Amino acid sequence: MSEYVVEMKDIQKSFGSVKAVKNGFFTAKKGEIHSLIGENGAGKSTMMKLLFGMYPIDEGEILINGNNTDKLTPKIAIDHGIGMVHQEFMLVGELTVLENIILGFEPQKGLKIDFDAAKKEVKKYIEQYHMDIQLEKKVNQISVGEAQRVEIIKTLMRGAEIIILDEPTAVLTPQEAQHLFKILMNLKKDHKTIVFISHKLNEVMNISDRISVMRQGQYIDTVEKGNTSPLELTKLMIGREVFLNIDKTYSKAGKTVLEVEDVWIPSQKETSKIRGMSFHVNEGEIVGVAGIDGNGQSELVEAIIGLREVEKGSIKLSGKNIANKKTRAIRKSGLSVIPEDRNTQGLNREMSIADNLAAVEMDRVPYSKGFMIRQEAIVQNAKEKVEAFDIRPDDYNLPTSSLSGGNAQKVVVAREVSMDNKLLIAAQPTRGVDIGAIESIRNSLEKAKKEGTAVLLVSAELEEIISLSDRIIVIHEGKITGEMPADEANENNLGLLMMGGTHE
Ligand SMILES: Nc1ncnc2c1ncn2[C@@H]1O[C@H](COP(=O)(O)OP(=O)(O)OP(=O)(O)O)[C@@H](O)[C@H]1O
Ligand SMILES: [Mg+2]
Image 1: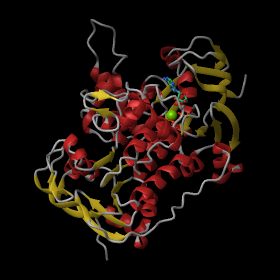
Image 2: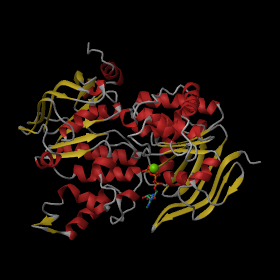
Image 3: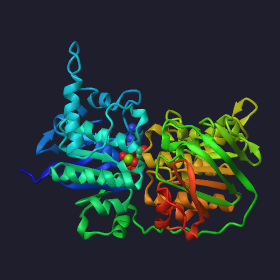
Image 4: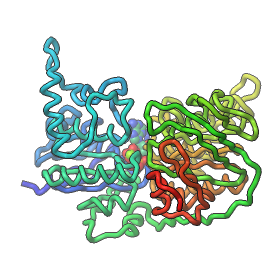
């Protein structure tokens, strides 16, 4: 028998005219953690969706435990012991965690679901892998990290021996990522095989046994973790070195653009309620918001962009109170937003890339004149942005639903930073993008700032906050616990404030 539990050879897969995978090759050994890395659009998700039977392959072969699988479907893949946790979660928000876990394999119709038996089995996994999950809560009330653990349990319940995780840490805080790694190490101890897709090389270097690299749909190489370095991996991924150091220009204090004054914002979660927060962002300045996820960052951003009610206090944009105004109106007053959740707040997934790149300003010059939409202007804009932001594939007539995760993010960033607005709210702007795109998105933010935009940056990456911001505010349980110039900040003093400690 082969030493591999998975072998994918000479794989080809196209979507219409887009060749997503040209010569895909991948192997996995029993009990290993195998990372799959590569630029946005390299074909990582597609390769793994093929292994999970979500699309048929055009050419090539897939062997699982030495058996040739002819026509894979997710059901057949599950029967072969494959489980997948997707880049975009697939849980049903209105159902409880337990209901989600057993969804799809309850006893046949006519029989009652045996919740007690299901619960017992789920609890076994929760204990075995120290999962920390609340079974009775509705999914829309739990954190992303918890939702992910639910997805992992789902695969285990279905007998998965090979678990694919597509960018699981993109949406996690560093603490949650550590928790996930412990779970993965325990799964490995039980001889489960893990396929781990990530853009974060430090994670990849930390957790993998072997690492495979793809570039533009092609298989490049598989290396042993012990024989490689982040530098070599970067070169394998993009064929050059990347420097994430920003040439920061320190801003001269301009006029105040965003002024948040004693703001109170409700939230379902106790720790996420904003309780009396005041700060400001000036022209030509980047203010970073550091904090452990779930301490009010999302609520604050949603309130500023008009998606959440403000209970008390004022939020002023260039002197005008925008608290409790509609998003459309706030945007008209000079707001750009890179939202945390690109799929529900940033993009219309069914619309073309070109239309998405113009969307927010579609009713204005140059895209409209009177009631007429000007198609040439939309196309011209799309051509420029696709090129400038390296959006791949470059066919701007495709719907954004056909883009890879990172390329979808680039569409949002391209549109928002180019609008030349007074205020830019950037929430997790580099989430899920590759290291080359991180470099270009960070440069775009720095450029917007140089041109006078006031930027509020919310990011789970402390390193990103420190390297981009002029000033940093730290929040804990909805309150500001400290503020400092970025050049005085480090992971230690920020970390302490993030835990609710004090400055001195
Ligand atoms: N359902 C689809 N329809 C059309 N094109 C698709 C579809 N899924 C993927 N593609 C295209 O296939 C290519 C590979 O995409 P894939 O999602 O596999 O990339 P990826 O390596 O996972 O990138 P990322 O790091 O950004 O998630 C991309 O050019 C993408 O636009
Ligand atoms: Mg992907």
